[in-house]
Amino acid sequence: MTPPPEPAPEQFARIEESPEFRRLRSSFRNFAFPVTAGFVLWYLLYVLLSCYAPDLMSTKVVGNINLALVLGLLQFASTFAIAAWYARHAGRRLDPSAAVIRGRAAAVPAVEGSAE
Image (cartoon, helix red, strand yellow):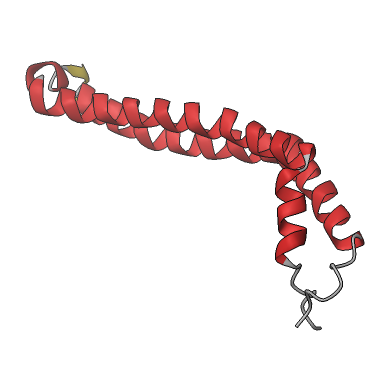
């Protein structure tokens, strides 16, 4: 099976300037940037507490399990939760819009003289 033909640069410019594409980028950014910032802050809090509050982090929670271990495991849990959350967001908001944009781009013929 042959790959689809590459769109012309003019076609890319038209796609990028379309309101649908701007909404798609905005939806992605409105999700990705705050979630990324929140996760980085959460991770840095863990690192800073480990460095500057070792007494707090060594507090026993249950048996030999201390607060540092619990927060470390929560780092993994939050990573998987964010990945699942993003997959759900993408499936509901990003993928349908991207499919519409992709379909319109495929339906619009390349500008004459731009093909090699």
